[in-house]
Length: 179
Image (cartoon, rainbow, N blue to C red; front, side):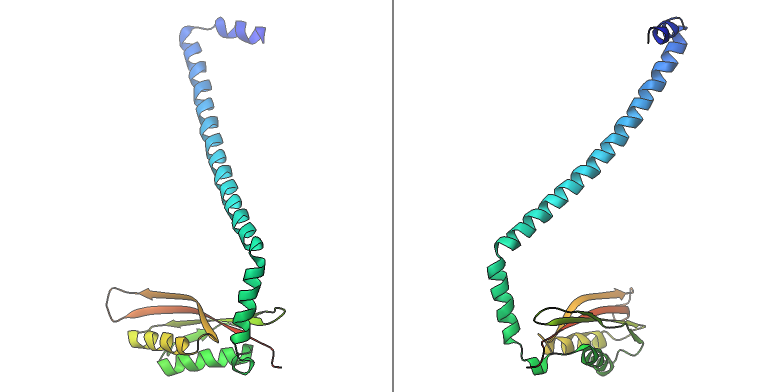
């Protein structure tokens, strides 16, 4: 260390200034990089802390959540709930009836549970020129509530008030086993 100090002190003033400038610039770059990493860490920490608090409140209310869930499931008539095939057919029929011509449907995804299974399917329609078709599809879905539920609804529109370019919908249903 003494040798480095002696070497530094033996340099001309402009060389000392140049070396000190490089060290200061390096320290600033390191400081900003550290600040960015610290900010990212703090945001992640805060997010995880909020998630943990939310999960803790749900766990603390487990009896209430379970009771409400059981009450909601008990209100559903098993004969009117839809299995995966019936969900696909029902959504396709609603889209056809509403007038959504250029449509494409994804595969039904099933999430099994102890008391019921949840099925979801995605419908995408393009080239829609009639807002009424989208509205009629939505109204058809809402008439089938709570057996059909809208999980995601995305409309992409152009500048014209009557031209809707594309529609993407994720529809879900709950299936209770028939007794």
